Length: 450
Image 1 (cartoon, rainbow, N blue to C red):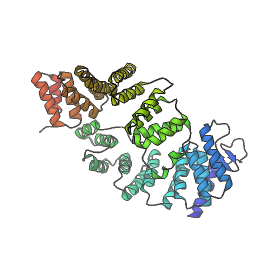
Image 2 (spheres, helix red, strand yellow):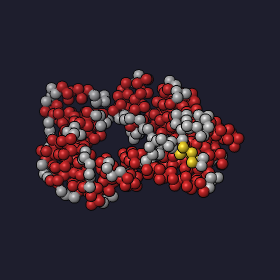
Image 3 (cartoon, rainbow, N blue to C red):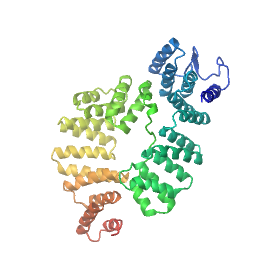
């Protein structure tokens, strides 16, 4: 094993350096005391530069410490310097070949530096060091899929699934590999094991929709399509758990904090939002996200202050959040003004209409509330957000909406969600109003046959 790692490292270092002398003008990285750093000519964020100064200083004091090389390589990785990161992590492994995490991150750094063959070879070594790490096998399968290596992808995905069959991301990747190889019958069995419980993620339904289309099962395809969403692109991986704490760049940290806020929620994102806000208070989106995170933990005064101190141009989300804070503090007139500002910027935003409806209802303006909820439901239907559409339209009906268009939109959302009983009630109301309602009759034909 040690011999294989050393041979690989020699290969990786030679290829990453392009086989040139380290003092050559063509050398892609600056080297301080043989420590990889970004190119002298590149523009390095001052916060990133400060982080590198710290990791380099620690390394200079103990150049034979593989853990310090690991930290420096991780810092380079976190801030997007992947070729330099692979070099630094390679130095760690050269000192101690039994470092699976360093090997794993080095593989990913090589992949992101577009050195795919070296990345796959390095990841394979990492998996020899930790053969039970199912997430690593899944990653290997994803890389092979990316390269069109279907057989290798299927082998790696099966290994990952064998180790941990309950991991939904692994099931997804395995089904992708099977479908790429034309094995739709096997893939559909794996997919139906999870979608039959009606609690699967939207991206699983998207894969099922593709599978049903290939199998010619149109009714099941339509049902899956109604619940489908975009594919998940960022599977959690404990090997990278320490990486976000090393992100130091202004734009990189802002991007990560907002990504985490969107995908994991305000509680997990809050520490990163606070860090990013300290170095990037100019970002309106960041300010809005931090305000929401503070409001979610009951810090209304701080949440409001973050918004009040905006120096830049307010956007739609800013006004929506300001309206939300004012609702929480009982300042309904201000909330109404702020959500109107949001709608002036984008009258087709359904969430803004939902907020406007909630404010109107609190002000006992039921007609305005119903109008906004009906509009929100219509807009949600247009982008196939059926759950949200049903909720907004149900509020409209609950508060007195009885027009045909509202009931038609509600029935459509209910049918798409397989809420058959509720859809029947909505269609019944439509046909009682007008037995010849062609839209209602079409909706009725979409109900499951008994």
